[in-house]
Length: 111
Image (cartoon, rainbow, N blue to C red; front, side):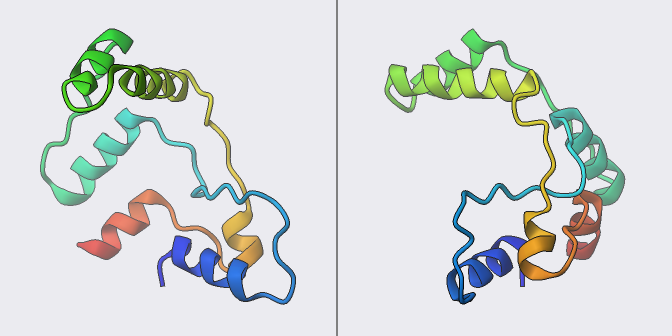
C-alpha cells in the first residue's frame, strides 16, 4: 500500500481520529533540482528542472486557467522554491508504524 493510502486508511479507521491536519513528507526535503538529479540517476534518462520566474509561470498557466488562479499558483511555486515547505514530519511513521520511504527508494521500487 502506498504511504498516502496507508495514512488515509489509518486516519479513517483508527478508533481515535488524528485530530489535526496531516502533513505527509518523506524522510528528506528535496529541491526540484534534487528530484531531477535522482530521477536521472535511477532511470538512466536525463531529467532536467528548468526554473521559471514568477512571471513566466503565471503567464504560462494563465493560458489554461483564470489569471487570478495562475497568479496564486505561481506565487505558491515561488514560495515553495524559497523554502516555505522545507520541513519533515513523522506522520507516516506515527500513523502507519512504518517509516516513510526516500524518493530514491520509491523510484527504485518502480524500476
